[in-house]
Length: 356
Image (cartoon, rainbow, N blue to C red):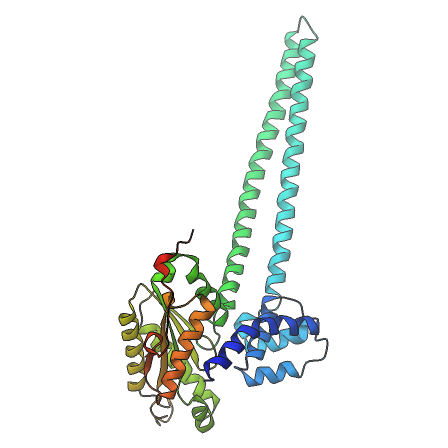
């Protein structure tokens, strides 16, 4: 874990660096491309970073998709957004054709009624034979219009079902784009949106807290046992974070060995107890090889806690929680630090503010 100041600079500059780099390379602003460059430039995946560095000065979309399929398999179904867009355009055009057809059919029916009305008005006397012909013509036209309308309704219902299917696929892609592929919990992109939403209301500010957690000496773990073991430990800890917290708690992996939890409706003491329970559970968990049973040793977390009401906004909240986390590292690791307990800590009295 880097010092808080370095982490703040990295966090604030990363988004703009991603956009600038993609523009410089002429990369299209597709969600799957943002994911590649976001992860590569964050440095959380060295192999991905090397793959991006090896790209040509003007990488093709096929080259980028090849990288995406390698490192983010479930997020990079080739052309999923483009395919969905094409399907939507095709279905909407067919719906428009159906509606134009129905409009034309109704206009034709209207002309028949108008012509019949004009014909009746132009005669003082109408023979029975003529009336029978008029009634027959109107009956055929009416029956045809009704049948055509029924066909339109049936076809539109089918199109609606097809469009709903496309919508479901897009929703699934959106979910995958916000999911960490290793742990299947929320990723940094989803976390950034969630933490920003805290400050949209007084309730969010007054009743939310942020817990940041970092695996202690994780580089040593990777060096000793290899990255596959490191990945397994990350997955296990993600499971602990999810199962040891309330179902409404937002749990995300925000970096290589870094996690974030947004806790709603808890006091500072309760939030501290949640963090302490997580720390204890991880420390007491036996991390072993599934094949040999060999122990990987005791794994611990350092954690930092900050209440949303202590910060001016999402970036300030993250920075203060990160400072508390860094203080836990400096205090010997495997402990929880509250930002409010740190020297010089200050917070805004949000009760004095009103938001629409």
